[in-house]
Image (tube, rainbow, N blue to C red; front, side, top):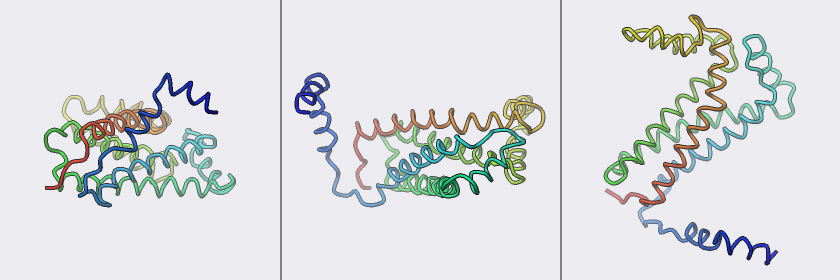
Length: 215
């Protein structure tokens, strides 16, 4: 094992990377409230794991979506637990994100030179809310259907471009299979990918600039 490690160490300088990660200075004013962002990340990872597990059984069609969710809850081993954890961690993620935003704002973490860190954080907040909107529709029950119909109908009030935007969101004039397919694709591929990219940017900026000082 020593020779294998030495081979990788010679090429990748693993020890230098490990030392940089483990020896980063943490300001003395940091307390438990500075962990809210990390808790949000943990919730996101739980969402990815449990959501991936459910994709093996969920069927994104208007005919089978609801019955496939029922199947997950009643027939799949620990399916009820996986879906429940997915829902609980979703609520926890939103709550932790809101508290994290308040903490950053109240401690002035958005000020120079951390403006871009704040911008990526706001984008992540929008993506988090988008997760909630798209995920809410996937069971395709009465609540999910009417929630999608209301949310996608909001842009219709915009002059000139309102109707085209609504049709783009729904995939057609009315809510149906195209809408569910769009929301499923957004929820399981587009939004997770964008979230991962902006989280990486967010953490790299924090890593580079360090934690903001007290007021």
